[in-house]
Length: 323
Image (cartoon, rainbow, N blue to C red):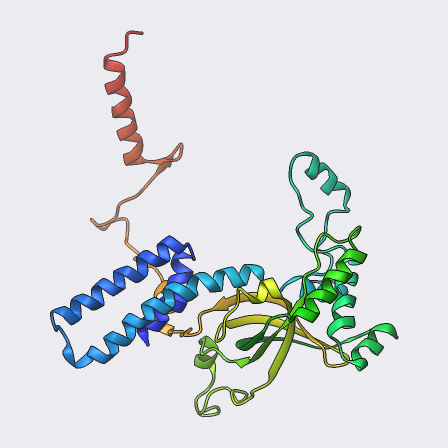
């Protein structure tokens, strides 16, 4: 369990997702585990060590994938829905603002941030027209569609359905029709997920006498299906964990409003690793009359000792100064 948590939760937070660093970190652990097995330092734990060695291979593969997937998600269709229905992406596009023109003249392109409302409307309506049910298509063509539910949840990927040839053909046809307004229009597939509840600090805050079995909603197994571009789905994998905001529209359509973080399939959270960073620094109150008292006085950004050393160095430099 500690091996899982080290690679899945502690290491990414402390060191990031650089592929070469991940490879090195996993190799260091492999060498340590192989050393233990070679010298039979703890033969009674040999099975656990073998499992930890296999986890090194999984971690080296999945840590890189989770970072790539997090950068790619939620995809243009979900960003379009979020833009149109007041989600996290609404109002982010700044390419049509006056200050953006000045930034563009200085070489800063802000058009990649968010989507224009017109572009979002085309991408969203195309997805509904090609993949939506009759009820969803009727809602889109009728009165204003409303958001009926907003929630933040953990998700576990259970299946990935890439777009089929028919969907790809229909999207290519639609792209030709909108070529003057869209740079790209990728075919949609399906990302199927179920609710996932990480064992994080929330569990520790619950009164044990009132909730002896943990959070009361842990047995909920709600399933979700999101429409996501095929090139984004290729970066995801079965078992990947996602922390996201989900919006549900009338007609039952759900979309990823915002993907906050992605995790490995073996993600494990340990409270003691997080608590290590929260230990307060020791503070001692020492009376001025005490021999342990050492007053630090800063002058021009230097304490007293530092200033004296700086003055001594300046005198040494002046000793051989011709001027």
